[in-house]
Length: 451
Image 1 (cartoon, rainbow, N blue to C red):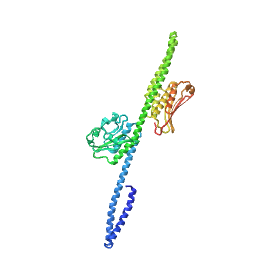
Image 2: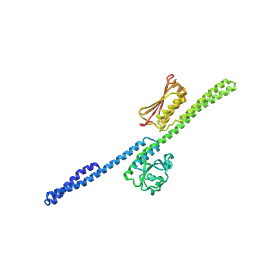
Image 3: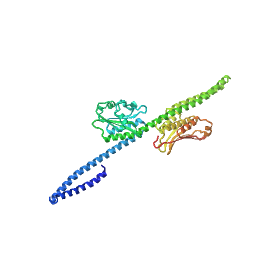
Image 4: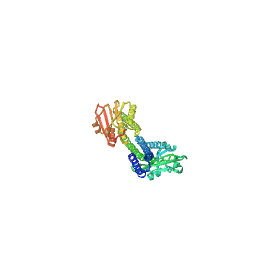
């Protein structure tokens, strides 16, 4: 019953009662009983009716207040869950946060969230709260098998499944691993109308889950389903970005070494000819140049391997990764490199875009080390409405950009441009002899949460 209906009832019912009482008493007892008796009877009847009616009204108000409190509690739980799960795009972290919030809200002694495996359809436990040690996060994803506490049934039916006493269910006893009587509920986890897993909770059998609580747990399952699916898609994108980056780095290392080995092959032929003609001094000079090229190639390879160790996980974020790399670059080379921070609103970048921005920054700093070792470097990140830019500037000797690119030199510049274009961005190089160099890479952003 709504408050509006209660308001009308409180006006209409007393009026109808008084009018009806007056009509009945006057038609039956008019002239039979004294007026004062009639008044006393009327007062008694009205008082009794008022008591009964007030009891009904206050009971209804109390029920409405309980419903409001329950709705507020549901909103608070869902809001806390949304705030916690929105901070991460890691499936296991989202699952752990979900089970923790659900268990605390429902007073459950154990909770778990399992997702259906795309490979074999088994239920994989992704997050848990209060389960035995073998289901701890350190053990990784665990297949529930037949001990799923009703999860598989909830997935199959697409609706909640309640186990009144876990002692009567082998699937619950095998999961909870205790003889204490529990009651358990499993609800489907859904996203876009598809059931992708199940959420289950268990608590003392003396506190069975009522209908409102089951509905609340079902709402949690529906809310977290979309978040988990997004996290899974993000994880797949990140893995794909890493694989693509490995292929790209392998190709770059191969191309760089191929150039060096080609040069050494030509020089060896020259040295062989010089030694045949007894031109020892010229042969030694050529060998000296070859040794220098070999040392440079060795250093480049070492730096490439060190750069690959730079963490590119979304958990670190672009800003932190660039800042830490700038600090490491300064320590290793002695060249001052200042990270000037992030300017503008937050921005969402895909994992592949973040990888390419970091690799371009690394290549630009490598060029500084090679061609402007006595300079000072500044590294910054700027964001506009739909674009983000990473800029690397130095005050070194500079160079003529057009002639360098047209001559096919500076293999690293072509690599940086290729990387920027691979994620829908573009590279801008500003330099002239004696005026330093600025490398700017501009890429599109996806929206409002930033790295």
